[in-house]
Length: 261
Image 1 (cartoon, helix red, strand yellow):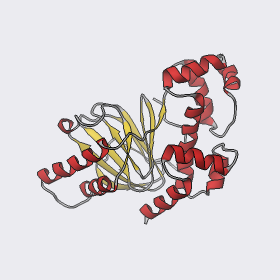
Image 2 (cartoon, helix red, strand yellow):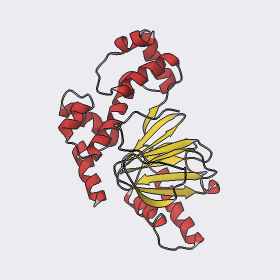
Image 3 (cartoon, helix red, strand yellow):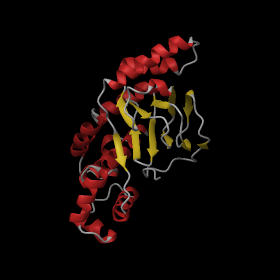
Image 4 (cartoon, one colour):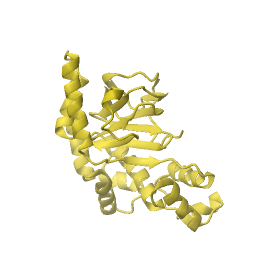
């Protein structure tokens, strides 16, 4: 299982796979690979969360929540000072949610319900179940908004994606990458679609947006982020980021700052 290569965290804190309720976690905090008999929603009320399974890595900025169904092996890494909220969904309440890891937009109602359930106010089990039902209703009514970077299995494709992860800003063509992998552009293009379900261009764009989210969370400017992540100018970066995230980099940065306050 391979995590997306991200800017190196300062001394990364690795913890046992136990995190319940809400906690502020430092930049680079890592939860080892583990699984749960129940489902789990993890929400970064501030900061950024990356969840990795054998199917790839899901990135969740502060306007999204990650979903891991019962039984899936997964790990978490947190970027920036993160207000992490972990909500367990009992297995018998998971039937309405998709049966694979995903990311959903967080509506204002879902956000408040998650914050309430992961806060410190005492509630009866019945009241908590009703609030969980509100959260589930909200996310199942929301289209998946996965910043998902799928993981390849073909050795040739793995060589290519590893090279891209090592330097997301590189503008190497698929033909040039193919020379390193021992495969033609046509073969690699077919593998991207067949194995990863997307084009080479789309996979690299999502990889770059992963990195852009982290740079913006760290306070870097839109222009500096665009250059660092491989876009030739800020306007093309803004267009790509907005298409994937659903808001401009500037708006994302403003809202992230407001959540941190």
